[in-house]
Length: 119
Image (cartoon, rainbow, N blue to C red):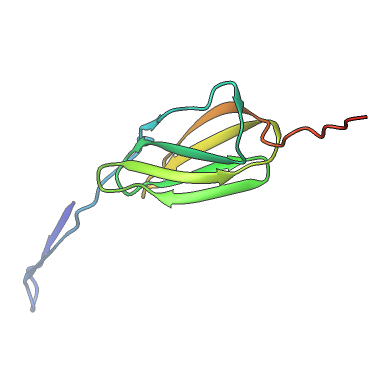
């Protein structure tokens, strides 16, 4: 954007100013890597994927969240500690302009061995 003003008075001269900016109204792409299917047998979910380079990636499940910034190629990896149960896991990518995209998957975790009583 440019603005130019001129004057014809006693100090008649021209003034001009220019600004450059980027308008970003699009949510970043978000592609998750291998998504857990069936029962997960560990209390740590390792999540990977691709999004816009430099995007803030947040994973949330139950009451736990994990954050990372995607690399220059858009790849990301993070680990999320979870407890036993069935719950949604949401992964959100947010770009520098504040645009967001979220992907949600339901996960079933059963990582605790059952108690066995022998009588």
